[in-house]
Length: 186
Picture 1: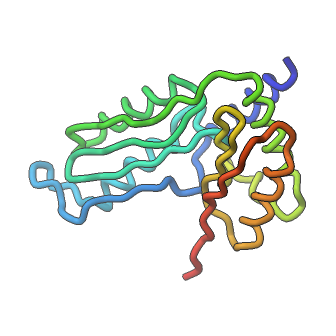
Picture 2: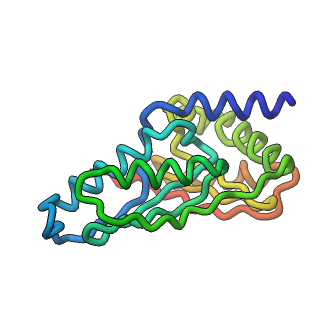
């Protein structure tokens, strides 16, 4: 019961605009019918997705844009987030079609326990706790059947490695895939 209250608090705390970019790709030609530039369309899709209620650290959303078609991918821990993502993207000017390939993660109290333990292990580490201060922390923890995948962006290779080691140390985790990207400096 306590872990579900903590889990709900983490979800609720992540409602505000995220500072971690969603992974997305846009085609380079403007939509011929609407005249919407792909960069503008990509910004609007990203904005709508990060503003979704309950989008948080245990979800991973990505998208690609090909003309007026937006393909949504990733993993979410709540079925309503999948449908909400599709609905908000459908309403964007210039979007004619949405292909929703978002995976809904299976319900599992074991996975919920791993999510919370991994969250504490990563964001409780002194080198990584600064990332927890963001509305949606940039290290996303995806748990499916005891397997953990880390998605998102960190400042440097050391942070990426520490996050991976912390996740590997969580009891009950079968495997860890570290897909964190290091933020490129300008």
